[in-house]
Image 1: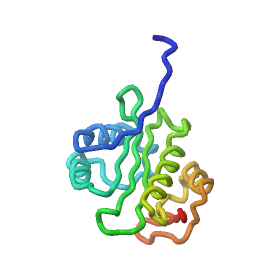
Image 2: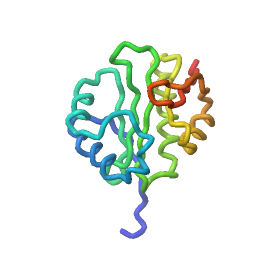
Image 3: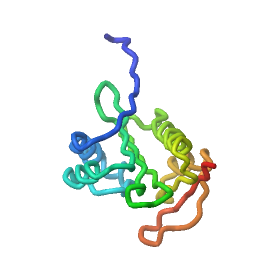
Length: 157
């Protein structure tokens, strides 16, 4: 159908999605994903943390059954009270509002679960991400000395 509308679906990611996640990152232009440092592009590594996730959240954006991006709230399984947010959107779907949608989802998740703050790290040259996070009220608090990323927090309550 030539006029078929595209819709986006958010689904939990599991071990069976490890290869899709790996492909999404590894098949992207290296310059495009240079700021994404949440984990290495290795299917076994990705499968391992998906298998171990209990409270941590790994969610994917699917369009017509194809994974086009994902986001995560990590650290809860390690006992942290403040989850760390991260996102990766395929270059083909950038500027479609998916990153903003993931931030709104993360904030709603925190509200529903009485989580008081949300944390993220972002490279200082990732200007599009910085704009999104500042628009949502994230506040820069420090620089991560391990990689010089900016560390932001958002009060949920």
